[in-house]
Length: 382
Image (tube, rainbow, N blue to C red; front, top):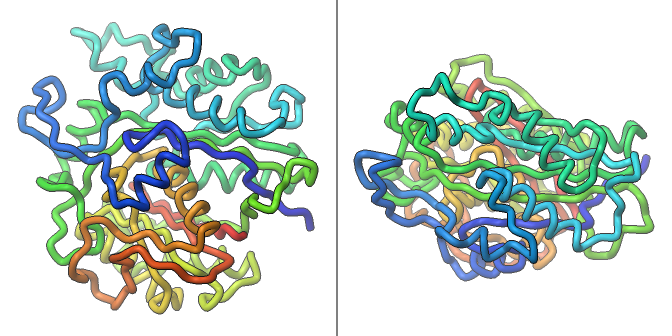
């Protein structure tokens, strides 16, 4: 059976405009989370990882992108940086273009005094994806993956399946979300937003911290583009809790099933996993559920980290950003610590990584969970 590899990637976030900048900052323990006091966003100050005011403009090349929204610019700049790292021609008819997001251009709704005047077409996810794809002279229909917070990882899983089916040879997978008043107020209404930078798996965690950014991976099964540094995309699986619209599983069994299927589909056991890059939102129920899933999947002896303390929760970009950081950590034999973690506050003795460590390893497992009870898990290998 042929294999699928990641041959180029990018992260564009408050921590940098390239994967390299992002990884160095994460490795050095830097966080993009800051305290923001913006009455247009929230009546009270809030913590979030947001792009600096002129950060995107500094990433423009010769041409201006001011006619595009912030969301569209994030996608375009991320895709461009990834494309610059490979000679794959995405206009060859054999390349999928997949966009992952939860809210897309929702900020356009806020910019109207009367929401009835909102430009509905500009807010449609497929319309936006097509606009971004066309910027790169991609003429086929793009694919949109919007399934709550598992969207980024699900988009990679979708791309892998499409390539293995023979429909495509390559895939551009990109995802982004923006922190807006709409998004922030939604999480505030759940009383789920932390009053301090988030602390995944910690006994004193107080909830989620939101973030924004974009990431892109370019996948291929064509050996001509694969190098020794390329990461192999292993099996993945999706499950659903069928428990509650916003509350996760009480048992963790469903996420555990996705984890076990991903390992089994890749021919691996828990002993083969170098680390688990968990979802780790730092809400009371998510982290509790993940600890139960790790226990059921036999992964309590494996180092676990969450990257939310560096990036906040970037929604539709989270699975992509965190998978890319995980790939580079795997290449460098590093386990990234969980920023903000001090003492364990979940039911099972999860081995939460609290300091940068090095170990020989060949594989890691990425997990994500989201509203509606959705879960996904996927293996990445050297």
